[in-house]
Image (cartoon, rainbow, N blue to C red; front, side):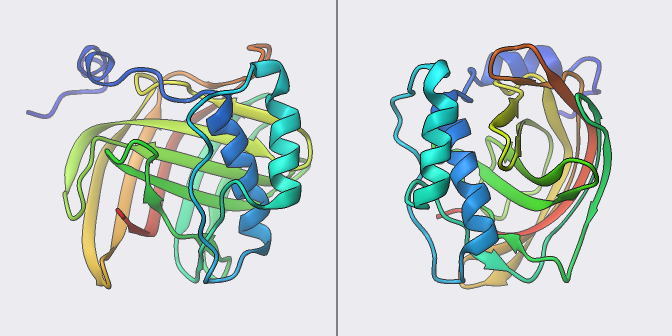
Length: 218
């Protein structure tokens, strides 16, 4: 049964524990470097499951970005993101082809999909946006699916994450087979609480987002 934005959060909170830790943020930083440099053949596993102390996350992320070994981006010539950001910085994102994006892939736990976008924000520079959606199966259309959002300002050491699946949700996601095990996703979602910085001193709210992506679940 579908639920409204006001009533669905008790259901979402009960479904999924907090999944975004320092290691995941470090992996996102590595993706930032990879999305700017990787070619179609690049692909490596996610970050290690054991999270480093938060104080070392920025250093680990910088090393991952420099080496490009922690996570990689498979670039594709499709995918778009429209979103509104407000907080430590403000932006109305409208990224679309011919700007290349990363192909979406499975979440580290394998219970959903992770969509990755990269573009420039005026006055801030390159920004990486990672949207995790799940539980979601390959080919499944769904409504009111829990989501989380991670933002990485490249080259600054600044990370913002919702750290859990109770702060954002996808109103609707539709999937169309694209061949070779891939799907074209159309996603519409929102957040009711902001993504916060590692030390909790800053925050950015992505109040709404509309996205398309080419993704695989394996």
